[in-house]
Amino acid sequence: MSAVHNEQTKLLATAVNNVAVAFAVIGFVTPITAMSFGIASAPALQSATAFFVVIWLCAAIGLHWIGRRVLRSIRP
Image (cartoon, rainbow, N blue to C red; front, side, top):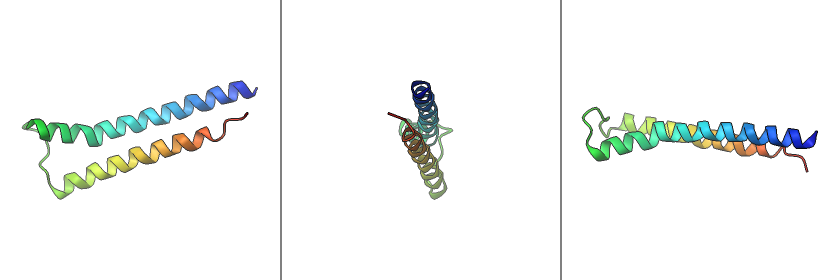
């Protein structure tokens, strides 16, 4: 039973971490890349844009942390 629990726990942690990566790409990598390439629809570098980038990045870090916490329930 323990092996099944461990695999399900790893699967859950991986899913949460994948969502964290998506948040980082959507909220952090994409706006910075769009601004660096000079795309017309890219957000201007303003305090509001920086605020939302930080919020997305913090959400990604928080989700990654949750994924790491889930892994602590793995049984030997």
